[in-house]
Length: 238
Image 1: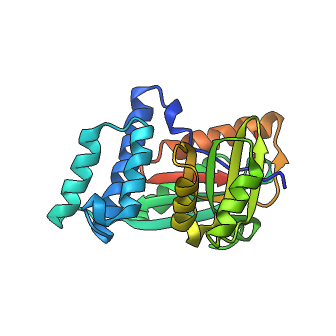
Image 2: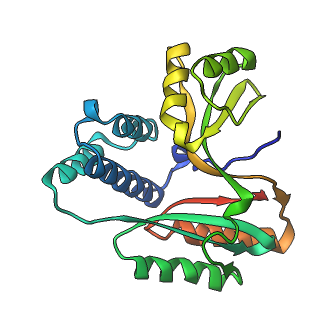
């Protein structure tokens, strides 16, 4: 179906600033997951999966442990999910996901990114209907039929499966993330996920070129500098 998805490419973080931002993202997510569920990894599958992803992204053990210990203490910040939508340069539809302990500050920071790049921030739902909220799994392989069979046996309502360049991409309903992951790991014990998360996937994409592309890249870079921004999804072909 030619679906496209945005991967944060955590492993590409090279500079100290990028690594610090990456560590902060995972620290917040781990803290919230441990605080809202259980800080004990054995009793919290979601936390176990999140820690696994953090380790693959080369997040240091002490950052992970500190976030869990903070959740055990019961104090600390109360983060809330904030999601903003709008239109970026080149008429690009954008969804910005944040974790924040100060919604007013976060909204101001995100709105500034829109304003300074002549973009338009919209109301909730203004562009989300043009995205599918799905669980995305990417791993090495080429036997699409075997993967589909394993998921069907587990009663997973598969949205789509694609094979390209020796990699298989599975799209499943976001509320079946855990069941899909478990079905894949049980059917293929040595599976190594390159991507393993819930994302907003655009239903259609469009090319962005020239000055619009330059301004769009500036917009995305500005959002990346906002501490509270966790993920950015868009429908542009870069």
